Image (cartoon, rainbow, N blue to C red; front, side):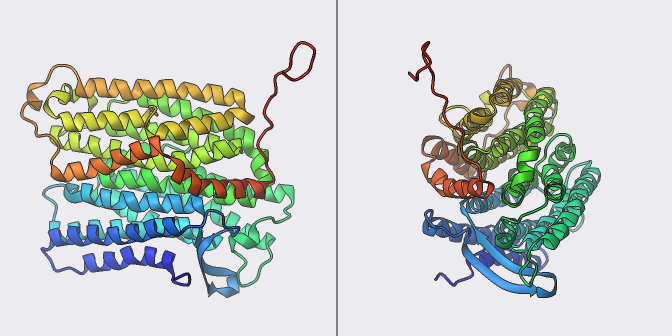
Length: 515
């Protein structure tokens, strides 16, 4: 079974499913949804099997590897493989995809032309996006990674631009322009990296480009090319402005995959390429990156507090959360690194719950304005209670998965950079403000006349909410399996960088001897 192309199959199944959905006869919109949902469960089951079969003690850089020559004249290979970090992110992506497909059952605006055709196209594009999500995390050839990195833009552009809200065209174009600019700069860096490597028919393989003896100036320029593209994708201040517009205009299921999965490509890229391929340049840039991360934490949280649109508020919280993730990555400690990776996984589930439950409430109220709600915990207790639990996960309440991740991230950062860690901790206080104030305004107080008789969560909606809350609790009380998967890859990456954890500070007594 070791020679079976597991990762290719993971990517191919949803692509074949997309073709099948698109080929369904006209008028079979319900069947299109059912086929898409069923297809999305197949790679999820396969990935769970891979996670159980993953050897955390392996000395290999990647497992479940595949290699085929693709364009040998240019050194490009079709090469796939995963370490613990990549496998965790693929598993997160494949858990969220069927949840989002189920949530997208009624995503499309009413009154559209040829609704059956649009429905088929919508669900087919979601499956195509799933293929590219698997590919971007599994690619072990730098050029192949770039292909998947840019290919993701196509389905997302159409999902926002064709199926989004009133400002969908503006948001889709803004998303595309930001992403293309970052991608073009990274392409120049990809080509430059190849010229510095050993070359040959497999010259873009990550294994062959790791540990190069680069001139410091060259290495720093290449690092900046990669880092800029990943900072846009992440998103980090000051190249974050596309996210609130895109997340607000996109259909809720698309916004969930955009913020919950696609943005993780940015932070994953920082780990896989910036740190692993350019260790000297990464350490050179660390003071500036740490400063930008702290700014992102506080700036995103402050802007979230001031929002009047619930979907836009949730988008801004993600900017703050990504600041924490980048902070832990560039702290370059094993604790902070593991915390950041776990944070990526938990943020995906937390964001999904916030976006999707908020969308359920918005669909009932017909408005995204926070001030148009109030008292909903009395008329929709399941929706309001679930929204509160998702909010608690967003503010990292102990007992939920985000707490473990945020705690590890801040502790790991404090080991090497205590001042930025202390400043970033204020982001926790701001998170409590924007979550609790949002809940207070939307769910407590008198019940407006317009909310009277509003139906609570239905069966389909409970199937969307329940697994997300279960994941919060499991990762909050028993994160060990996730950390066991992640930690070996963390140690390996820090080893490539030649970085070790800071020695613990030993207190001394008045005579100068250790206590």
